[in-house]
Length: 159
Image (cartoon, rainbow, N blue to C red; front, top):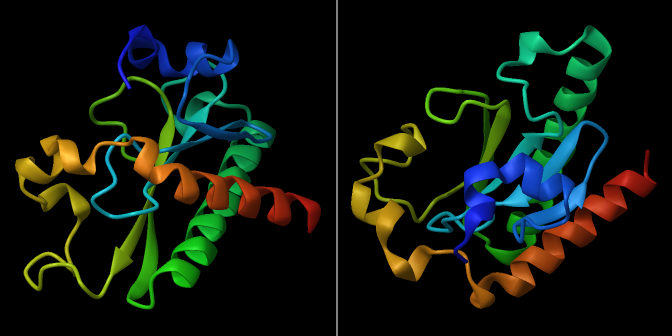
C-alpha cells in the first residue's frame, strides 16, 4: 500500500481512493490502521479536511464524530473478541500530536502483549513494531477488514 493517498488521507477517502476505508460513517471514515501489530487497530478520520481538532466542529458534528468513534470502537471490540480469546479491551484516543487533522485511534488490547507494555499506552511500543513489514497492512488482513466492515454494518442497522 503506497501512493499519494497517504499524503491526503481524508481527501483520498472523499474521492474513494483511500484503500484503508472500511465504511463511511456519519461524520467521518472508519479506516483500518496502516500497522496491525495489535490486530484490529482502526482509525476514525473526520470527513472535513480542514478540521484539526474536535473543538473546530460545531456541537452537532462533534457529537456525530464521537458517536462514530463509539461505533467503530464497539465494532473493533466485537470482532477482536470473536477472533482472539485473549482480547482484553479497546482504548480510544484523540491525540492530534502528529497528523494535522482530527482523527481518533481505536486500539484493541490483548493479554498476550508484553508484560511491560500491556498496561501502558500503545505509543510506548518499540519502533520496530511500527516499521516491521510483517505488521504492515496487506492482503493478509482482508478477512479482518471484511469482519470490521460487516460489524459496522450490523451496528448501523441497530441504530
